[in-house]
Image (cartoon, rainbow, N blue to C red):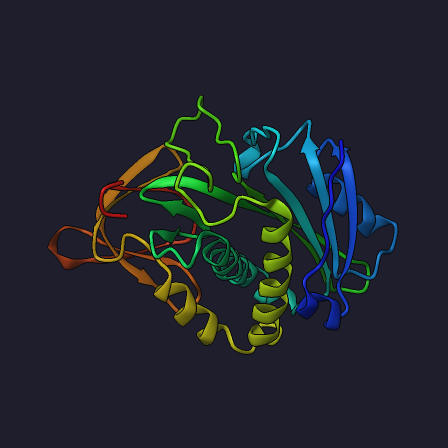
Length: 260
């Protein structure tokens, strides 16, 4: 299988590296293995196909051919206390790369915390995994899966692809180059967690479902209300009956697909 991929110019200037594979079980697994091997980080792992892709909460990530499967390994990107913020940095970076590929489509929005949707259907997903290092620092792997040419049809939620939405390009190599540059830019803006306020503002500008009805499932419980954004720590703000604002740290979120 011929497969070409290259870093964008901004990522190259920032010192990022890239390894490309024809096939891997999981790009995240490959990146995680590099932590134990002492890799210095800023390493992208990209594969033409995955045979054991996975998503959040151990779910299977269906990996049909023609899509983008990539993981970024970061060593000591910030103090451990700021680790959770990386999910929002990644979400903003991904949306910008997708919009650049799709032709700056405002139909592509973020669903809390970092899924990318187009007209309510899932276009891509992120999986963050981490490990503590012996020196007290932490390592993080950001896995990215994007439906470029194909979307799975047997998912419990609507899914779509860049081709299905009529994107200007479905070229995964072009998308990856844009993604690597976007990540380098937003990680720089973030300043190791010192400027999460800038990330939060950028995230809210790209968010879907703001001020719309939302349903959150967590620990076997379902909460309903109106999505009012995220707080200074990135927690979801859900306005319940009577105007009570509840902060949510984790959960599965669903919006009305006609409005998200």
